[in-house]
Length: 397
Image 1 (tube, one colour):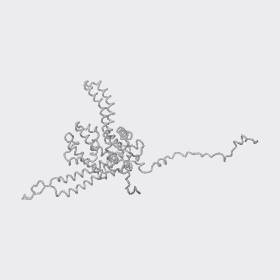
Image 2 (cartoon, rainbow, N blue to C red):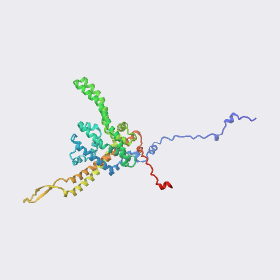
Image 3 (spheres, rainbow, N blue to C red):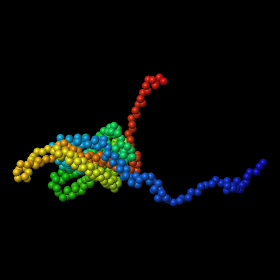
Image 4 (cartoon, rainbow, N blue to C red):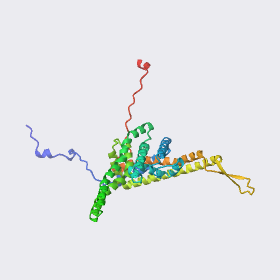
C-alpha cells in the first residue's frame, strides 16, 4: 500500500512548472501618434478640399444646357405673367432680362430665394404675384436643383457623375417632397404669427392702453422670437433640406428639415466657413468665364459691326454740305441674341456650380454634426435586368 503524497510535496512545485503570465506595462498616451494615425490624406485635415471636385459641373455641357433651357423657360413664363408681378420678376424683353441677370451670384440668390414662400411673402408682392411667382419658380427649378445637388454630392464623395437617365427620374420622384420642404417653414411661421395678429387686433380695439399693451407685447415677443428663428433659418435650412431629400435613402420632409436646421444651429462656424469657400470658388469661376465671354463678345461685335443697320445720315462738316456721314445704330437683333447668350453664360455656370456646392456642403456638415463619413453616400438600387436569351442553335447544343 503506497503512501499518499504529503501536503508539503503537493504544493512544492518548481518555478519552471508555473505558467508564465505576461506583464503589461503602460507606456503612456501617444497623443501625437494617435492623431496622425487618423490622417490618411489631405481631406482628413482639410475636408473642404473635396469641394474642388464639384468644379466638374461647371464644365459639363449637358447640365449647362439643361440649366440654360430651364432659365429661358422660366424667364419666358415671367414675361408672360409680367403684368401682376413686381419689377423684380417682370422682364420687358430678352436683352433687358439677361442684362439684369449678368451678376451671377445675385441671380442665383434671386432664383433660390424665390422657392421660399417667406421671401416672396415679405418682398412686398400682392397675393396674386406672390402665388404666381412661387408656383412658376417651383415648377421650373425644383427638379434641376435636386439633380444638381445630387451630382455635387456625388463629386464631393469622390464618385462619378450619374447619367441623366438615372438622376432625372430620381429627382422627379422626390420633387413633391421638396415642395413640402419649401412650404413647411412658411406654414409653421404663419401659424406662430396668427396669435400675434390676434393680440394686435384686440389691443387696437381696446384703444391701445399701456396696462394692456405692455404685457401683450411681452407675450408676443415670446412668440415672435421662435417665429423669427424659424423663418430666417429657413433661408439656409430649405436648400440644405433639399440636398437631404435627394441624397438620403428616406425622402422625409420633416427629417430633411431637421437636418437643415441642425446644420445651421449646431455647426454655424463650419457652415459660414464652407459658404465662404463656396462663394470664393463661384466668384473666381464667374470672373474667369466673364472674361472669356467679354472677349468673345468684343470679337463678335468687331465681326458684326460692318453689317450694322444704318438708319440715319447727317451732313458732314464740309462747307459744301454735299458729303454725308452715315451713323450706325445699335447692333441688330442677330448681334443682340449673341451678346445676350454670352451674358447668360456666366449666370448658368454659376447657378449649376452653386447648387452642386450645396450638395457637397451638405455632406460636409452632415459629417461635422453626426460623424457620418462623406463617402457614406446612399445610392439607389439598380433594377435587375434580365439576361438575353440564347439563340436556338446554342440551346440545341
